[in-house]
Image (cartoon, rainbow, N blue to C red):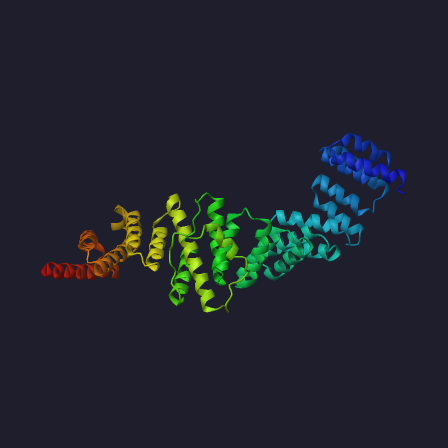
Amino acid sequence: MPSIPALRKEYALLLVGCGLIGEAMKEFEDLELWDNLIYCYSLLEKKASAVELIRKCLSERPNDPRLWCSLGDTTANDAYYEKALEVSNNRSARAKCSLARNAYCRGEYVRSKILWESAMSMNSMYPNGWFSFGAAALKAQDKEKALDAFTRAVQLDPENGEAWNNIACLHMIKKKSREAFIAFKEALKFKRNSWQMWETYGYVAVDIGNISQALEAVQMILEMTNNKVVDSELLERITTEVEKRVSTSNVPPLITENEPKVDQFRVAASGSEYQEHVSDAGRSRETEQLFLLLGKLLQQIVKSGSGCGPDIWGLYAKWHRINGDLTMCSEALLKQVRSLQGSDVWKDRDRFKKFAKASLELCQVYVEIFSSTGSIKQLATAEMHLKNVIRQAESFSDTDEFRDLQACYDEVKIKLQSNSMRG
């Protein structure tokens, strides 16, 4: 059965938890629990009273490292932590932790790392300490020790999402995409509302060929940012990978009225890694599903309008081209061309090159539509567009892009002349 003083101490601690600091202080003073009383003074921000009490206690226990640490906490003076180390024969883990934190705040990362390493050798069951050690090591450019420290942190606290995130980032620095992917997956269990983490996770997922997880990452980013954050580079990498798989798939993807909903890919994404050894039929079905889901996401972005720039219109056009719909492809390319237009196009070489590339692709699709349908309208539209671009882009006549436009224009004129002769 607990003693009366032990029960009174528990009662006082309960009072502190309830915010009744004054009542708790009376109990601690009666019980002569000076450490607890000092803590209460600190909570009440009564620095002078706390210092007075600590010095009174030190007069009786001058070799108590805890009191010297308390004095250091109250006065924010590192000299008292050094004194705590002196009287403890360098065995005060608390003093080393406090010195490490202060060194980190001053930007002395190497010193902080050394102090944390020493402190954790004394108290290895302190997960926050391992995390702080990792942060200091990372700042000090000691990536190996940082990785070891963050790993120890998650071993003690598996729900530390920040530590898992840092482990993943360190694996990315070391070009270990598979290890980074696993760590990010753990991090996202506990920090699902960080769109930046989802974005990095998406890149790593593409690196290891797990396109379903990359698509989930894109979808989560769109949901969390209300379609305002669109990573066109990540989407381009996904689209390129999906295009490769479609080109080697036995069964081309087909769009039907019973298209899967966007959320369905979360079921398909339950595996942690893309399976290399699946049957041809299974691979084809998976590729078709990924293709459909990519289209859903691109359509969602296009309809929202907020994140739809020229790069997205280009990817949307590519998706329709892969699907064999040249009409929808041309419409998306036309919007890409319009989004790139402006007076700066004729003054900036790089902008002209992007505009010329989109224009060429648009007109080439128009030629393909003419070849398959015999419709002269698209061919005439291509001729007019190319003629206007070439006329305004004379200052860029030395570029390959200009010459490609000229070649396409000559081809279109020949086709128009040939068609008129037949007519």
